[in-house]
Length: 122
Image (cartoon, helix red, strand yellow):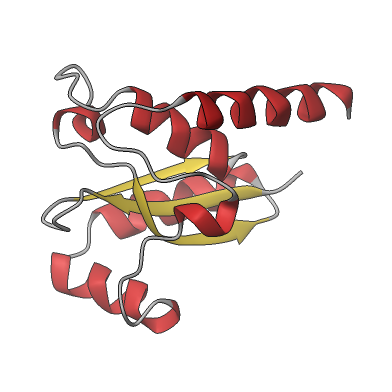
């Protein structure tokens, strides 16, 4: 199993959120479903556009990297993103997620359900 540290943003790229997961597409979908919900940071700021992610073999490495990046300045975070994504493109579609606004549409929910079933079958 792989683990990932990732950075997402909102549509205007004014807020950055750093997280970790073992399933990037499903986690991005969860952020999309939380859009507008003030109980979560990503939801409050409508962060569900993927800018960067990095794979790790061990969960501890992913957690350590997440904590490290969270301490950085915005400038340093953007420099990290631009090493692999110089145009700051949203990477959601590259992971099979359809574009969505302040809600996740049925295609994304179906995709997430398929991913979870595949994961459970492993």
